[in-house]
Length: 178
Ligand code: 5GP
Image 1 (spheres, rainbow, N blue to C red):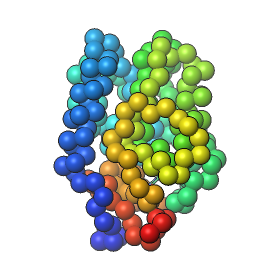
Image 2: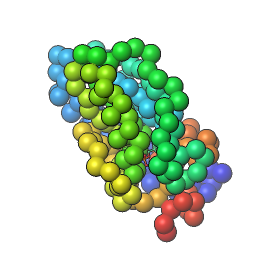
Image 3: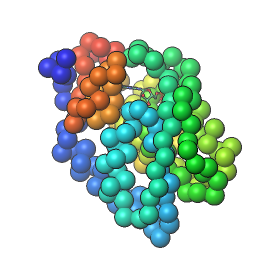
Image 4: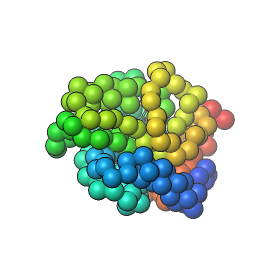
């Protein structure tokens, strides 16, 4: 229930940080086209808010990855549920993720995407939870570093609910270590 959720990062903080990220990305890809790949489902709100702030030509595609099922702990098993709709060969690709936790999902995804020969491949993640890192993954643009708590909202779910919260919150006692 939404009443049990505590605010970790407010709507205003997210908006301000996205302005900053978009400025940096805009500078890095100046006069280039950017192909953004949103990792569903968790990144859909971040992706929508980020691409609307980008000044260059942007194309968008999505894929669906499953690594958690309905549990709050990583299973370590990554599955590609739906693939991209267009080839990425020769494109400047930015993977847009909701959160990097163990890094297993991103590691799998980057390995997969690299075989398709993009011109460049970078990662933007809204959140990074470094405490649970199991594998080193490159993160080029990061919104916020968060503590070891199960976070929800702004696209991130708790058993498929709470993605629609406009802020990032956490659920006391639900998968966090406090
Ligand atoms: P990783 O493979 O890095 O452990 O996990 C990445 C995926 O796990 C994310 O894309 C996200 O779907 C899910 N995940 C990891 N931590 C959290 C969390 O605190 N809250 C939610 N809702 N999902 C998480």
